[in-house]
Amino acid sequence: MPRNSGVFATLPENFFSPLASPNREHYAALLVLYFRLFQENSRGLEREQVMRSFTDYLGRNRDALLADEPGELEEDFSEEADPRQGELDFDSGRSQAEGPPASGLPDRTVASRFLRKLIASGWLDEETLPDYSRVINITPQGRPFFEALARVEEGLKTEYESHVVAIYSLLCGDAAAENGHYAVLNAHNATTALIDSLKVLSQSIKGHYDRFTADAASVGISGLLHLHYDIYANDILDGAYKRLKTSDNLSRYRPKIIKKVGDLLADEAWLADSARKLSRLGSGTMSDGRRRLETMLEEIRDTLRAVDPLLEDIDRRNMLYARASIERVKTLLEPDSTIAGKLTSLVRELYAYRGHDRLCHRVHALRLFAPESLYRRYRRDAVEPKRAFFAEDKEAARRAEEDLLLRLERQLGPAKISGWLDGQGGRQRLLAAADLVRDENSFVRFVYSVLYADSRPRFTYHLEENPESPVESAGYLVPDITLRRKQ
Image (tube, rainbow, N blue to C red; front, side, top):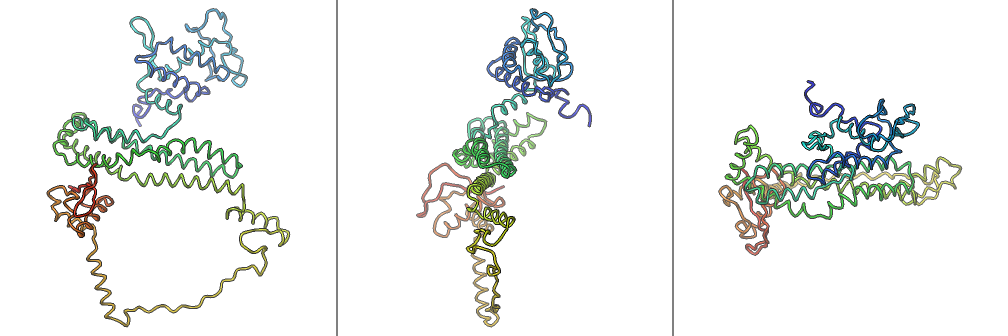
């Protein structure tokens, strides 16, 4: 691989050295501290303000500091050294194991060293303004890592509600009409982030379950309760999973988003205008931009339709964890209350077996194991196989065959329903529910049409829901929906 390619073509080679040093915890804390101050100010931070914050933090954590690397405690003649100190005591003969470094250095000098290392490794940058004031800025390559550290420091939270609202606002708002290319790009990114968040939640539950199964045999009841109510409940039940089950954003906005995507895909003028604007952002042609827009819109629609299996998997994993935790606690509290507990008690009794009277297995009603307690399987009588009824009655077989063919002919399969919709004018126009339902026969076919359009991706029609109240047609109360034939 060429030296100018890869991650470190952008990042300095020693970029991660502060986070790999013995003082990595303090470097990470200082980076987060700087990032919080940076967010509160509209401009870069003056060096003096950064130094005050670093000095205050390192002064509180002085005893926990360790030597980063050889040469870290060499003499420092920077402007941060206090001239009143005279000959600085670096205690160069002290090893890392004997105590914290720089025990004789002022807190401000130690803070200056930490700041210079962050600047040298490429996290921060120092700029001298025309008025000779010095400002500490975030480097471009360090910006995404600052955000990641801040998220980890405040506790990782699985977010999905904001993604759903963002998709709805982008596609169903006024911005989509004027700047559709930007709206679709951002909505596609939000859809990907939504699925990623749900996957992270599912994998987080699996991680807690794996930790529980690994520690369940070695911890007691208090340890199991700690894993369930202190760790799992805090990370999953009271956080992301609770928001997932109590929020209705997904169920409320998903039908509207899917309907809007269908409208945009059918709007030729909007597609042409958005494709032209999208082609200006890159080197592709208008046809490339149109295909890209259509692909992103279809992925948004298909992803939102396919999110239900992922939600079911999250519920299944949560139920599996809860069941395993409860069963393990019950086994420790009341060993005889579960089959596993009874088998465990039986094995222990067999291991310490001294006679029939001590074998209290409680698996079945017998009080002891003896030859009389053996279960004997009685031989079943041979059963004569039934003869086929049509072997002697050919007329009955013919009638059964005709009845079967008639039932197959009357089955309303996808092909037959698609042909019925085409016959109602589906190739030329949108088909509304009120126009399709005219009698009992058409109502049944309408129900099958909605079923196939909503559940079968290869069905020739797709469903578009309108945010209106149900309408009455031919004495039936049907939802105000339309069916559009796929191109």
